[in-house]
Length: 117
Image 1 (cartoon, helix red, strand yellow):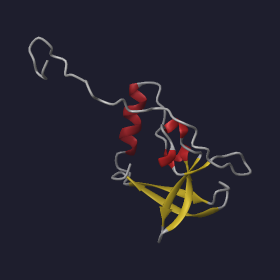
Image 2 (tube, helix red, strand yellow; image 1 turned 135 degrees about the vertical axis):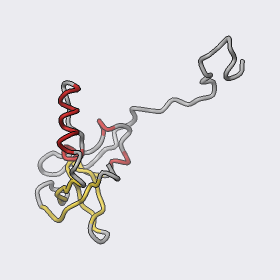
Image 3 (cartoon, one colour; image 1 turned 180 degrees about the vertical axis):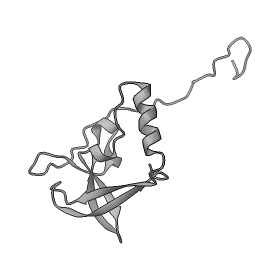
Image 4 (cartoon, helix red, strand yellow; image 1 turned 90 degrees about the vertical axis):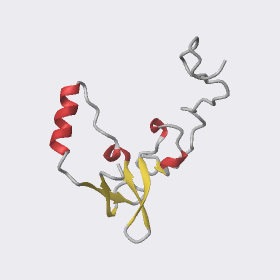
């Protein structure tokens, strides 16, 4: 059967590969506070990302931003989401503190603009 056949309006997924949402534990190292740190690229899903995510800032420096600072807020209803969007629409960028892998020693800032979010 071909795509677009009137007797089968649903496109065929024959030969399509599923996108994995889980995989092996990336095995991120932990700091003295028990926080994981490393590259988010090693995670199979957002749930597997480390607590401290590797970023490049300044002039090629590396450090970590807190995942909780990158994650969007969790809304319990659409009204709260709309209100948050209105309040933040005019903010051009979010400036995050960059830390050493200990998650406590601040070493710079990382600007997260709306274009990179």
